[in-house]
Amino acid sequence: MKRIVVLVGVLAAVLATGACAGGDPQAGPDGPPQPGGTLRYGLSQAPTCSDPAQSGTNQTLYVTRQIADSLTDQDPATGELRPWLAQRWEVSPDATTFTFHLHEGVTFSDGTPLTAESVRATFDSIVHTLGGAKAPLGATYLANYTGTDVVDPLTARVRFGAPNAQFLQATSTPQLAILAAVTTAKPAEQRCLGDVVGSGPFTYSEYRQGDKITLAKRAEYDWGSAVFAHRGAAYLDGIEFTVVPESGVRTGSLASGQLDAISDALPQDAPQIEATGGQVATASNPGITFGLQPNVTRGPLRDPAVRTALVPAINRQELVDTVLGPQFRPATSPLAHTTPGYVDLSADTAFDLPAAQRILDEAGWIEGADGIRAKNGQRLSFGVLFSQAFAGNQAILELLQQQLRAAGVDLRLELASNADYTVRQNTKDFDTIYYNTTRADGDILRANFGLDGRNLNARGAVPALDAALSGQLRTIDTAERSRFIGEAQRLLLTEGLWIPTIELSQAIGVAAAVRDLKFEASARLQFFDTWLSGR
Image 1: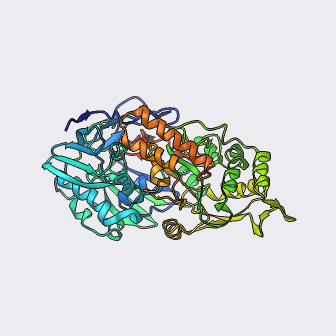
Image 2: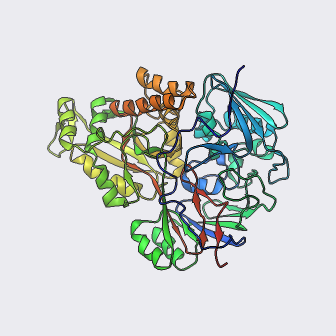
Image 3: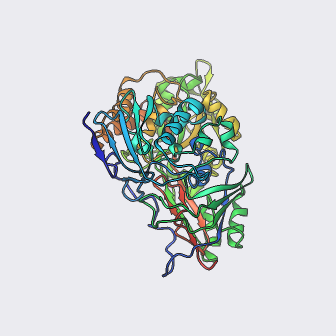
């Protein structure tokens, strides 16, 4: 079979912007980096699992990304795929076979070597052990997976039963990071307890769920990604992650020198951080924007007119200006503007309350004495399931609740714990669900909206949308993939299957001593090049 050799990821489109606002967030002083020291990091939420394959939230991935390497890495500045554990790869013209040639001499933290069998066991365990319930993203990346052939000790051939053009970019994600046999042999629950063995530059030295996680440097590490700025081991001796849910406490701890960096710095925190010589580093997440995904089988959301009316009823700029701050952007599409294949649909997402009211009027939803509309005895009322995975969720939804009420819609807020949120999400036990999903590839739409993906809308067939979502899997031509992904974005809006609100941005408070704390292509933190000045 004729194969296409891919050395630097021609399947990846160029990102709309770099992964770090304003370039490198920590421009250090002249002179070489200084190795040593432990960076103390304040997480806004507790990580959900120590296994990168089961990781979903940013706070979890900040941790798990450091202990496991991927076959490829994605350049945050260009979107190119670059070598990591695989030094080169080939893709078949029909995008069903991907062959990876591994670097020699790579070891996992338990001393065992990286081999093609490691790749096979990792992917097999995601599909057959974890499955979509435990590894929802990884399972969709491996859709139609038929197996991995061990061609020789350092050559793995991954096979799919149908075209899967997105898979190459997926190999750069933490969810498909390669793990040691001692980990892939474990059941899902045991892989969440901190004893996960990867080939990354750090290892777990302590894992206390909900409290504290400590990582230690691997001194022998010497196979970093081609995106990394240096070779050899990481500069930091370790990273200490502490869960600090209160924003004011995180900021105070950073300003007083008890922490070196913190998640989810708020706009009002910036003056206190900057007064001590620190700064707030930001990056816009690619992937699906924050928004409401309606379950189309429940209540008034079964009416397409209700779903489409919600789009113009939302004042997205007001959400940004009132709740978030200038580092955030209103959503103008189901995809964030930094995602390959993004289409600007700002004209279709513009705030237009009279238009929303007109759609509902024409559909027979009549305003009652309390201001809430009804039709055939059914109130236009539904719930939104959400968690506090992003600190601003509740404030955004409270303002959204007010905005929708002006259109005659009663939005009920249903805050859930992470565990309850996951259960209800997996069982589709919600009217609407509020979330975002980060990925630097437009296939994330298929993963969340496709009939062969999570399909949280619980929808039936929509032929044009299904054709677009499947079409982008069949071509390795970047322009053709982007055309399909653009069509899917438009249809998700017109069908009322996604009600976008805002784009997620990372806002990291960083002390003056921290140098070269970087964002990778999906706007998650990369600590390999980070070092501490004056420690």
